[in-house]
Image 1 (cartoon, one colour):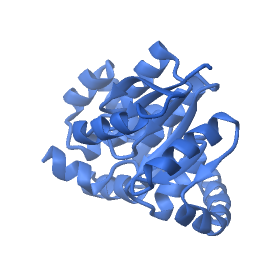
Image 2 (cartoon, one colour):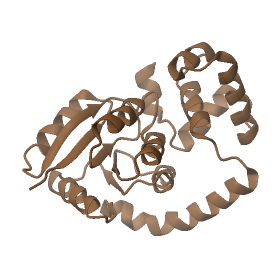
Image 3 (cartoon, one colour):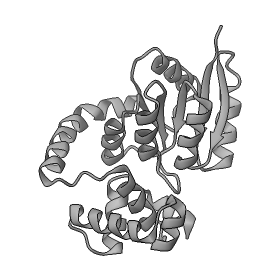
Image 4 (tube, one colour):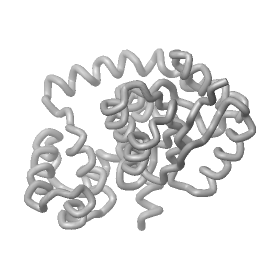
Length: 225
């Protein structure tokens, strides 16, 4: 029987170790790699080609939702299952937009996580019961949200989202340029464009926007500080 290959994307080593031990008890599941941030998750997924990525949302350098978007664009056959401690509407909306195949809360039992993995591999969607009850409310909001964003032309590109996250993490333009492998001038252009699209013109407000839309969590800021 072919095993389901998994990549764990979680910035806390203790949590990753717990998930790995839990999953390794299942004879049909195999953890082939572990990533500690979103950018590493995308790179490892391209290298290892796992069947499914268990993706946390709140990670440094690149959050799990943007990592999911980038990963699925490059490898649409890979499945992504979001595993988060938060169930805010913003995160649920962003997860649905990103193309993830499911959204589980971290308090989900080991048995249910494994069942969700198998369900997603079969081509189905899987959500924690609490998330499922809220999706019917979130879906209409998501539709309206997409319409508003389209009308205002405020949809951020993947690169602009990366720049926004690094700004929210307190990175200077030079640090951002080094992190992304681009010039400082290009960083400044991306920064200007996202400010124009969002009609936000100071770093503090950009940071608040990043938190409110699930691009970064306040807990990540506390860890960085």
